Image (cartoon, rainbow, N blue to C red):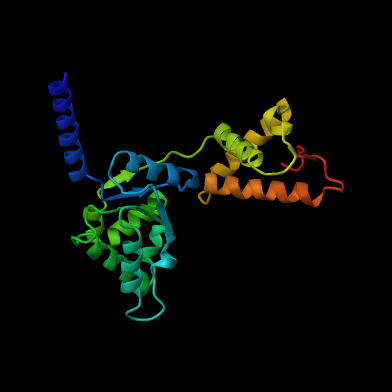
Length: 239
């Protein structure tokens, strides 16, 4: 029994070492959906790729300096902070805009091949397909440093409504959202029609825009509330 257990343990350890050698250095990503970021860190942590499940969320603004020679140290400082973690760069296509941003991109490409950072963090560039393809074409070094692409399909209408419902339910307020949990046929039809129109727009941001819609709905129901507030009813016109 013991010999069998030790044999299995050695096999698991061997496979783990192989997996660590294959740690995905980078990913590009299409639709930004904030709810995916923390779980992604936990997935890689549970696989043993990272020392913590923490995700360092930043934008290109956090990488770009204010004067010549300032950008490089900012990028390095950000990478130092992300060691053993995930570095999530939102709207990464902005790295192709402006001289300082280009400097940040060159520094990132250079640093990711250095022993200090190689296989010691996971860097994710997030953005939309066309924008990310344009970014990759600007710097040939990016394609080799970021070999993996993960495309997230857009949320469908039902998923958008489910997200809106979940976000409102998470509010620490006495909300009555039966208009969403038990919608009338006419309201469901109209909601589907409007969301289909919105999702067809090139600027549609999926979960991000649903979060904005949820904030607007909550603000509106709060602004129309009359004290004493016992229950806040979200009606069809508000949504």
